[in-house]
Structure formats: structure tokens, C-alpha cells
Image (tube, rainbow, N blue to C red; front, top):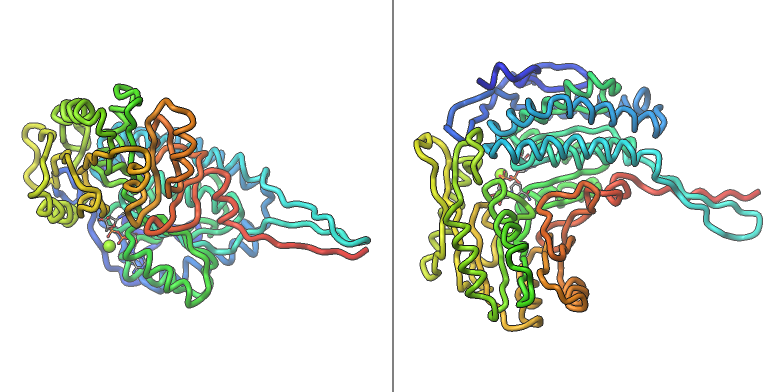
Length: 483
Ligand code: NAI
Ligand code: MG
């Protein structure tokens, strides 16, 4: 079924505008998480492929790609955006089978991918330097310049969205890119190679090398000609990447997940909040860096919120990706085990509600029920650690001060939301919360191409998305001229 929908090779690497075999000629297999079937063979790239990809990117910077004006780069990104739009359904179908996410969610990701290229296409020629008043007879101005070859290591949970935000901004600034997608889901990443050629991107400006993290990924981050690294994934590998990059003094952007809270005060519009409270936790089966896994609720409305959330939870359905229910399977058996291990710590908690499996789910699919736990103490393991599954905890709080203390009690700081109609409280709490993004009376898990995104602490550092990402993907040169 998938093969009829694939219009580009999946068992090759994309280097210098061409598809080729990887040096080792070894292959890895991609599994459909909905039924456990193997859906594609991909390459197991190694340091030789990485070296060739980085060389091709360096050449592109010295010639064709490096010679384009910002406006010309923008036009290429617009063209890429159009090509993605022409293939939205096809790309969504491929992503749904590869990642296991419900088809409608995969469609949103394809729309976001097109929008990222459009946004950064438009931004290319609108990022400017400054002139700086200085001594008499001096003219001082700053220039924004690309880093050079940027390395991009991305995970399996939102390939299209993450490709859009990381490649889009990097290409906009004139860097040449080497992308190492996840060995667990990388089919849409490979589509970008074919689309880049169709759009007319110069050879070598975009290179794509699927393979294992410890092999292809590790050689990419330690390659001496990589000038910047963008990584989205686990805390553990984020730490490895930062320390490896330090050996060559290469800057890194790390986006490592979170334990994002939504804080519901007693004057909140609960009915408006309800779909956000739940969707932000179960979207992509909870495998979302900005998932909201902690729901902090004022004791004054606790029972009402618990009742309403539980009632909605018990209607949630888990199905195969193409059945397009509320949740699909999780990515792998390993991820299912990680979630189940966390649930072993839930024995002292009350499970308020859980969803249902759709009928006749394939035995070999990796299905997990969404579960809502209540009366959880904020220091509990399930309220402190990122689970990366559809598990949410409700934590009661006394007052504003208590809510802030609980919200700030984890090592993470990625996204938060505040539900209250009191404007002064909105401002106070938003200021007090440790978080890269704060939403007030909404929650934008993953959304908002225009909104700078990133965290602090164990959520990582640096910003992607929005205009802000363009600063991270460039370096500033100060020019000082004496008449
Ligand atoms: P991971 O961090 O191991 O993988 C992410 C990417 O890094 C993949 O492309 C992988 O090939 C690459 N990688 C792995 N080891 C590497 C190395 N030594 N050098 C360079 N690149 C390397 O994440 P994984 O194993 O897929 O998931 C483990 C846990 O990480 C999940 O259970 C979840 O908690 C968290 N996670 C968080 C994500 C987020 O969006 N913040 C995304 C994916 C996972
Ligand atoms: Mg891993």
C-alpha cells in the first residue's frame, strides 16, 4: 500500500542533488507502528557518507548556493513550499504509516511543513544588520552571515514539522544543510531531497543521510567542518551532543522535551479549556516535546475539572493511523515498554479515566491507552519526568503561589499555559513561570510557525521557529570603517 505512494527512493542517501547507495551498503528497516509490518528499507550511513555530505555542502557554499541572493533563496523556499502543498495528502499518508500518527494529525504536520518554508522564504530578505554610531569619521555596520554547514539531527515524532522549522530557517540564512533523520521514521525527510531538486535548489545545499544515531549521527556532530548543530530528541543524547560539539567549539541548539504544565485557576472558562487540557496531552499519543502532561487545578474547582476531563477521557479512541482516531500507536515496542515502566510507579495513584482500543487492532501494533491520573503529588515521579506517552496527571493546588511553585518544580521549562480571566494574574503568573513559551487561555502544542520555541534547563537551549530562529542560524559580523 505504501509502495504505490512512494515516488522517490527510500533506500538511498541524498548527496549533492543525487540519490546514491551508502558506502556500507547496509540497510535498516522501518516498521509501521500500527501493525508491526516492515514498510521500507533505509540506509545505514556511516562516517564516509557523512564526510561526503559535508563536503558537498561546503562546495555548494563556495559556489552555486553561496552565490545566491537572499531573495533568490527565498524564491526557492517558496517553490519548495508550493511543492509540499501539491503533495499534502501523499506526504500525510506516508507520515501516518511511518510514525503511526492519525491521518488528520499527519495532515496538520504537512500543512505546517509547507508553512515553514513559506514563512522562512518570506523572511530571507527581511533580516537586516544595523549601523552603529561610533567615533568621528567611522562607519560601523553589522552583517548577518550564515554559519556554514549546519548539521540537523531530528527525531521520529514530528519529522515534517521539525524539518520545516530547522531546515527552513537554516536555508533562509544561507547555510548548507546535512540532515540526519531518525532511523525510526524518515520517509518524509527523504521526500525533501526529491522536492529540493524539483524546486531547483543547487546541488549540495541540502543533503540527507538516514542512519543510526550512534553511527551517522555521531559522525555528523564530530565532523570538523560542521559549523552549527541543531538537535531535537532526548535529554541523554542532547547532553552527548553538547559535549561532543564542545570539542570543536561548535554552537548547538537543543530541543529536548518537557513536563509542560497547564494551570487552571478557579475563574477559568473550564469548557473552553477542556479540549486544550486533553489534546495537548494526547496529541501524537503523547509523544510530543511540548505535550502538556501536568494539569494543575485550583482546589476550588478541582472536582468539576476532574469530572469533565474524566468524562472526555473515557470517550477517547485508540486506532490504527489510517483509522484516524484520537490516538494512534506509539512509535515502537521499546517506547511502549518505557511507558509501561512508568505505569509501574502509578500503583499509589488513582486512575480517574482511560480511553478505549478500537476493535480488531493488529496484535503487532504498539498500542497504549491514554490514562488520566489524579490527586498526584507534584513531587511524584509521574509528575516530574517526561514519559513520552499519553499519560496525564492532575495536581491540585491551593493558591497562585502554590501553583507557581508546582509549575516550576521540574527540571524542564518548555511550554506552559495559564487559564484565568483575571488579567493581572495572567501577567504575574506568566512572568513567574520558567518556560520558553507561555500560553494564556489556550495551548499551542507544537503549533505556531511564527512563535519562537525552545526551553531552558532540561528542555535545552536556543530557539527555533519564528523570526528568532534566524538569529540562531546565523552569526553577526561587525564592520568598522575609518574614512
Ligand atoms: P534520541 O534522542 O536517541 O534520538 C533522536 C535523534 O538523535 C535520532 O535521529 C537519533 O538517531 C539521533 N541520535 C541518537 N544517538 C545519537 C548520537 N550518539 N549522536 C548523534 N545523534 C544521535 O531519542 P529516541 O531514542 O528516539 O527516544 C528516546 C526518548 O527521547 C523518548 O522516549 C523521549 O522521551 C525522548 N524524545 C524526545 C523528543 C523531543 O521531541 N524532545 C523526540 C524524541 C524522543
Ligand atoms: Mg535513542
